[in-house]
Length: 201
Image (cartoon, rainbow, N blue to C red; front, top):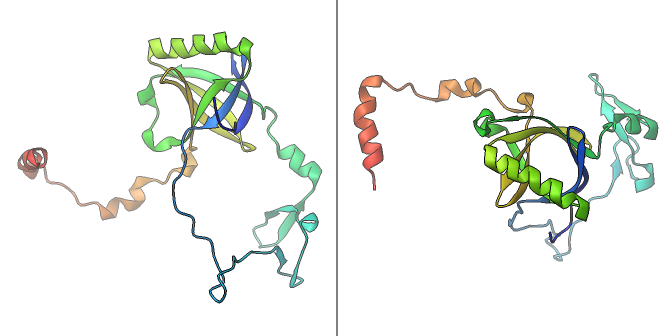
């Protein structure tokens, strides 16, 4: 597949590990509008600035930290960051198979094309794509993408495999928060309104 892979690793189907690469399945075509200095039209660049010392700092002095409840920042060392990395950061693990209808549509996040990463991976890759296509099922998996474990769905798509990451439940807002904005519909008016809606041209 042409393009640059965004992730390389393996997909584990039980004891079978298939070397694969992920490629972004979508791309944005939005117009970029960079900030400029209106006086001369030159681009505005943002520098790393230390709020406490009131000075610009080099990249070598930039680290990572965790915000504490009281507002202070707890610095993280390289060892701390290493311990935060996922133990299987290069393996997508298939946990089981379900009907596609079992996945709530609002859960879908980013799609990735899955391609075999080596000649020996082509046959097991094609076999699993064919099995999913014939059964109509999708594979539920855990995918460590961008140093974060995500739920994901693996499905056949136009002759290949497509991996779609899923949002965690706590990332999806409860629609009941907006229930007061939705008007109630009286059943007596549904029949007539239904005819008008479906007859509109």
